[in-house]
Length: 138
Image (tube, rainbow, N blue to C red; front, side):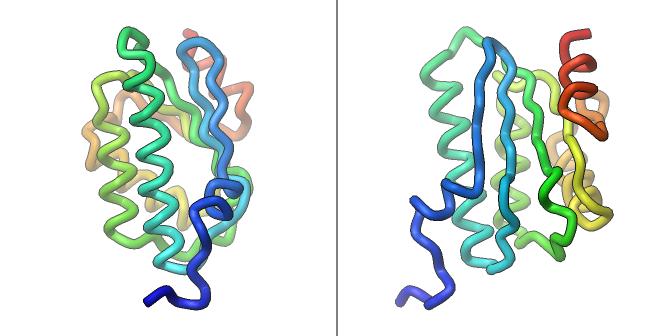
């Protein structure tokens, strides 16, 4: 049974944007998802899209910018979503992660995910995408 608040994959995919510039991927969360089921499904879709990118370009080691600028009021993330994002963070084709924006709660959740991946030294918070790009190319 589908709940009335459950959005289609097409609608959920409109809440993110993935851009790739050579070995730099930028994952922007454009709209907050507050329903647990939608949050979980979005994390699955993000993981699928990123794994597809890695599979299509097996020789490229990527740096990733996660742009959370529009996620200020986020109130929580289901454990299934955290596990999906942690799986992404552990991928062998992902070298460094820069996280941009986000309020206190989203920073707490993202820090937890970073700890799960073991990538603490290869991730950092930034106020702008430009600053994140500079760090990733340094």
